[in-house]
Length: 367
Figure (cartoon, rainbow, N blue to C red):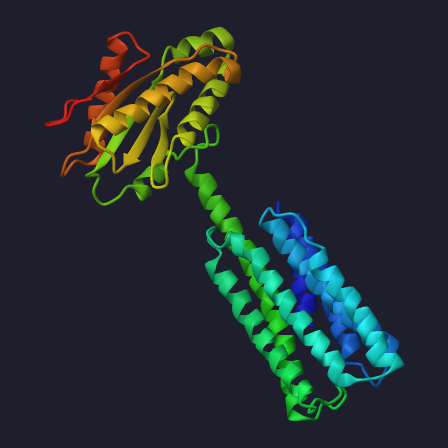
């Protein structure tokens, strides 16, 4: 009931999420895996063709859909062979050692490694999402998958030594542990997957709130939370598109938006890990470069200016240039003061003819 309730919740969320494909696969997978598990525990009550030949592969297909949904959530292509081959393997082994020539120990020694493999595939599918704010959900799924895998390993070793008993011997302590822990682990995995989805949605909403939708750069509000405690060792480049008002007046605001989007993409391409690019407002941008001396920062600013001029005609259909002002942070310099210095250098560049980089005066530094 718990597994089916979580499957229904996943299906309901699918109608309200842009990750609907992943959620639908999770919902269908949970239903199939639950159905397969119910058939499996019905051994002795229904024919083995149902409880084993259909029940066992059905559980694998259900978990396989959980894997495919997780891959889809991570933006990765489906890997059907990860679970279709194990499912087909179980069709044949369940028939041969369940109907044709019954052998419980051999069935268990095939089934248990397949479950361990599927748990590894599920975690591998989720792993690319680990840096996107889903840590708690990933840990939830990992612990449950690890617990189930250990249980399957123990069960396989138990079968290897000939101590395994049929599923309908539910009164035995080991079988009780296997099926209680197995059921709880599957429910925990479902819960963890739904938690992963919700955490991912929260992270995406937070990212959208911090980004300027037109340029993809950080907005000023997000900048405040990203600034380090001290800016010492940082360089700030103020960027302003030349004659931007004329672009809007002559070609329309759609053309102006295209220029701004192009400028944002160009700035992002020049960032290293740890650097920041911000749309300050209108056609003004700020680029914060971490750990740079003035000559290197000047070279980056010059490349920015050159790329904006060189690539604009083919990307926007317009001739675009920009003026840039560079300022180096000194001990105790805050962002407001540093921006004021860079902005003054920017206006010096405009006064000197535009389409150039000017540096604010910094003691002991030359461009």
